Length: 356
Image (cartoon, rainbow, N blue to C red; front, side):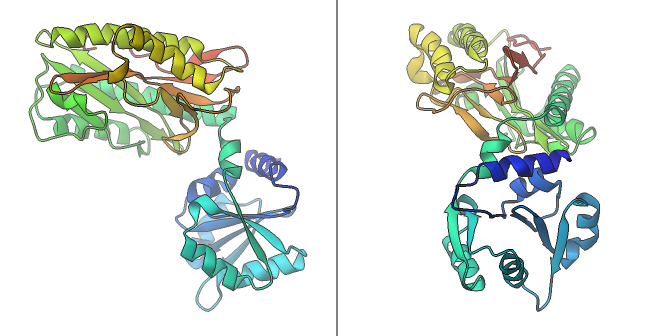
């Protein structure tokens, strides 16, 4: 069985007992289950799964989805017509649908098109399986991280001055020369601007002798990486130097907590308690981490209220931060894969605060 076939089987095992089929429409989930990278594709998951797309992707789907029956709709032939016939031939009367990825209007249209078929909302069936990565996925994630680190080191060592936007574009260009692109819009924030956790690069000059926060990632074979480093020059405020040491200690505590069987909330707690002891807890205003894969944010989440525990194959960030309005912010983020007996830190770049 192919890797995609194995993934489909795992999702089918998670179906509620009163369902025998699931319609997958979310593009990332379709890619995960089939390898299809086009903008329009659907998968009917059942004992004999089927792939649907429109005429634009007939040739592409033949190449990317060779192991499934493929049905093409275009012109007067609608998806609902092909789907209805397929379901009727297999005696399916109740069909699961990805409620989190369909609008109310879309769900209503689907119900009307599937006359005699009950459409049953489901959530997180594919996403739950996606949380545990196989060796091929981890290899792509590792490659993405390597490219991101090389881009950051290269850009900073060759930096001749410019704006936050200049540096962000340089980083993106270096990444795109090696892999398919960035995993999210790169954050470059200098000075007091770094106090915004999701700061957008400005057309403002970077003072390399102050504080500089960079949050970035690459995407290889569809899989994302994520990393943050904060650098402090000789003119950086002393309170940010103290904050950097505290955030680094919180990062180390969080990373040490990442291992199979540990509650996700306990990883958050391990990092948060360090900053609370330093009197900085109120300045840590976001969660400690999140899962990463085909999407930059996916399960599991590492928050105070998170449910569930870490399992081998999960890939998570640990990214504590301290943000002082009007002064600046510190965030340091590593990127780990949970193994059978611990965790492998995919981030090899020095944690600062000095420039590489």
